[in-house]
Image 1 (spheres, rainbow, N blue to C red):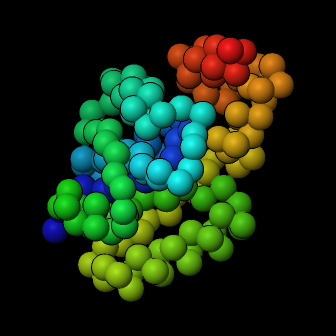
Image 2 (spheres, rainbow, N blue to C red):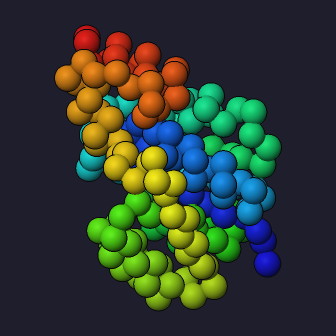
Length: 160
């Protein structure tokens, strides 16, 4: 069975919490595919192509990490890639409830694909892309929350 795993998300923007999950998952799974969901019903701060570029720059020195995008059912994408695992980060109990439901649905749709949960490091339990966007819109410092190249672009984006 393939050790390929997919870490899906919107990553709008990619945060240091996401990066922590990527680093840890990449030690367990090879390859690890960081997959940006293409959701035409949800307008993001960054386009999917911009998010892909930002993530690629963030993981460029990491071995075994690929960056891609997908639309449709996640389990179909994992199968297309020849994978057998989905990686999800959990920050709090509220994340677990939602993620647990999603994992059960994915298991029903594709029993051969397992969902693996990685607990957030304590320093990232509060961090979300939504909060990062909010801090950026209000002119706050982002250095502790996102990679530097993303912080710069976020400030440029919200000031224009």
